[in-house]
Every structure is written in C-alpha cells, then in structure tokens.
Length: 333
Image (cartoon, rainbow, N blue to C red; front, side, top):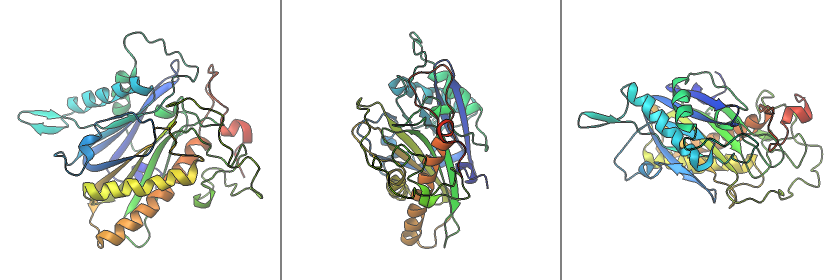
C-alpha cells in the first residue's frame, strides 16, 4: 500500500502547477465512472456540478474530480479535465456524444504573493488538462497541485493523502486533502498535530500530543478575510454504495476535518468533502458496514490533513505565505 487514496483500485491522481502564479490543480481521474456525493460545511464554498451528485439526479457516475487553487478563476480547471476525458472517449452518453462528468471545488490562494496578473485568460484550464494527463497511482504530497499556494493560519498548507483497511469488513478507505484552512492544523503555534491520536508509522513526524496543552491551543486565528480559506477533500472506498450512502460517507468524513483543524467550518472557509465509491466490494451489512466506513473515513481524512501540512515546502519568491512545518520544526521525532 502507498498510504494514499490510490490504494483504492481504479483511482489515479495528477497535479499541475504554475510556480510563477503560485497556484495549481489536482485531478482525480477514475478508470470507470464512480458513484459520488458531496457535503459542504464551509461558509464560502466555490463548486462546480455538485447539484448532480444529489441522489435524485439522473447521472449515476462521475468520471473525475477537480480540486483547484485560484478561487472562482480556478473553476476553469474542470474544463481542462473535461477536454482531456473527451479526447480519451470518456463521458456520459447522450445520443452520439459523450459528456464527461467532472465536479470540482476551488480554494482561495489569490493573496499568496504569486503573480496573478494573467490578463483575460487565467491558466487553470490548461493546468486542469495537464493534471488529468499526468494522473497516475503515485501521489505527490505537499506543495503540489491545488496545494501549491495553500496555507493555514500559521503554516504552509499542501496536499496530503492517506489510506487504511476497514476492520471487520473487506473494504479499504483512502483520502486526499488540499489544506488551505483558516484554522491551525497544529496545537497552537507548536509542532504537534491535532490529528496525533490517529497517526500511523510517524507519517507526520511521530510527535504525539504535547506534554501540556499550550495557552494558545484554542486561540482564534488573527486572519479575518471572508472567503480567503478552504480545505478541499476527497474520501474514497472500494465498497459498492448508492449515492445516498455516499452522501452519508461524506458527512461522516467531515468529522476528520474537525479532528485535524482548529477552528473549522467557519464562515471564512469553503470546506468541501467529496466521497466516491468504486463498487468493487458489496457490503454484507449495509448499515453496519457504512457506519464502519464512515468512522475510518474520518480517521483517514484527519491523517491526510496533517500529512498535507507536514509535507509542505516553502515557496521561493512568495511573501504572502507562512513558513513550512519542516522549516520551523525539522523532521519530527
């Protein structure tokens, strides 16, 4: 196992970024259409084609998901992924045409010091096409793709991913997060992660909890620009789920954000969690197995958030971003 969302067979991840702009795109491309749903908790989200994920909508499967920087400009990234899929014969059949189904969401990274003077043509469509083209089972972490220009309240943000088997079932769960949170992923301004109880094999430093909670552990961040933060996430499983069950999985996975970020789901965030199910393994107990899946999805997502900050690197030439975790604290235990 790679300890990544691509441990779910049939999922590939690609990143593309523009270092000058200090922004980028992450695409999750599925080998065949997957069942999907979404849960939106942040007060300032930016999304594309999420309405069709409601259980009563006609389309039963999606071809890809897109996470992008660039705020509203980044919604163009999905058009690039659609173009790549169309070139490869993918999409929902309508008469003699195929229409690729690609929901997506964006995060705000416009004030991170990168050059956003792109004129009438933002780069995100091209970055989306390249991200889809680059998709593979190997998942780069940290300051890549949608995490290129991401930040948290006190540290550089980035892309994180993790996975786990679900005890008592034949399922596996994976998660990927683009961490650009208003809140902190660490306990106060120190090196310890809120997600420490869920860590495996020192994947984000192995520091555990602090010996005593610092005075600033629950201090409210000083940033206050509305809509200028967002954590985007995808949880995936190889279970066979309906759209309604996928929706319940996304709801349960949101707890992972609450375990890893303080504070979270604020009016200043656009927090979004997508869930996808590839359908390889049928549940033996639809209710009990879904409960187990949701519990593990929350744990795996909490780990992915911490990994995204732990793996992030500082960007040369940008002055609107805080330092990377490793620049401040080294490599961990």
